Length: 136
Image (tube, rainbow, N blue to C red; front, side):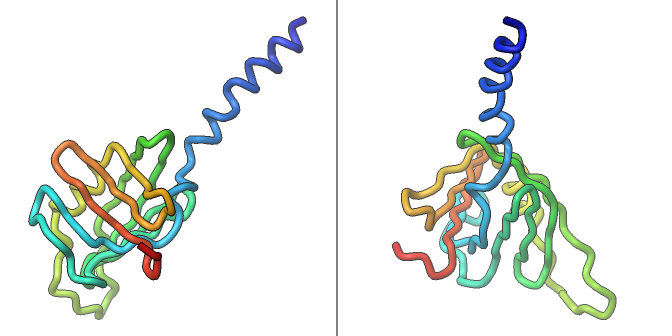
């Protein structure tokens, strides 16, 4: 009886443990729209986010950022920080703190049906990303 109870418990917990990955969000995402701070369309190529498993990295202008991500059941947790430019790299552009704050403050996500669009929501901001080359 105990082995059966243990098996049932592990089976019930299994999907929850697996769901704590960021697999549905994996890929390259280009920022296309911001609502909250500096609202409006974003010039193509200005910013992108790459999610691979539990890592996140990207660029905003010539400045880079990197960190971690977790997602499950439309909830997301992103923790990124600006990267120090490489020696000799000239990047007068600093990543806006508001952008990093919006990424790090994201609590929920929505993927479009065809997964060509990703929206990250914080309490004050919505960031819209699209997969480069995705059909709309």
